Length: 109
Image (spheres, rainbow, N blue to C red):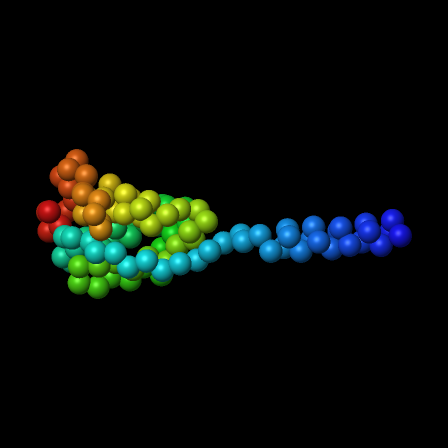
């Protein structure tokens, strides 16, 4: 009987461990002000590709917005907004860093 109980406990533990979510990939489209050209897109892409959890190869840009695929187990969408704001662009309701704006290419200011 102890053997059966041990097998049952091991089965339950294995099921719980396997059921724990390791990743949660999501897509988030957010408004980004000031993206006027490829140089602006490159600035945002470079900032996001250094961010753990962002799938930089899946970034897409449309007029006034960027779509980001990311792992929500590693970061929240507010972190994505903060990274873009630190790159010099207003993202969602997070204002651009004034210091970063001065470092942008002239065509993006």
